[in-house]
Picture 1 (tube, rainbow, N blue to C red):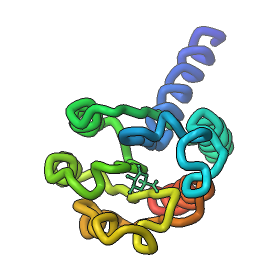
Picture 2: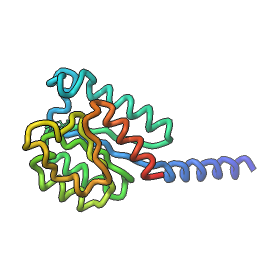
Picture 3: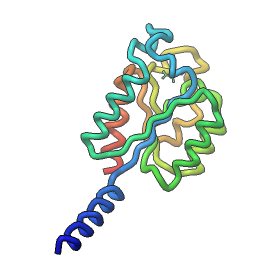
Length: 163
Ligand code: DQA
């Protein structure tokens, strides 16, 4: 009886794990400098602080969140490839690669995982070269201009989307 109970518990646990939603948060180049980098544009919140608050929000939604940052385009592309079959949704701030990378666009299209494009600053109110994004037209949505809160808003939208 006890044995049956425990094996049933294990099955339930496995089901719960499988039922959990998985969200991948990708941050592009120079975002590791948040907190000190051009604070008038990007604010004083560090990337570690953004990660902590997203983790708390994901946890309370019983959702698994993986957070990464890279300055290398190929690492971002490999992370997107590896996400196939493992993640339900991607939040991505491609940073400067937003305006240059056909390869990141192709990777996102290649894995067909729904994603939200996130920016701290309002890229449409800045230099003309920042107004074009290679990923916006493939995204579920774009959130920009709210500083660190852009990530929170994006996570709220993602959780709603994958419900
Ligand atoms: C950014 C905007 C990009 O234009 C810039 O290159 C960044 C940060 C943002 O979050 O506002 O690095 O993606």
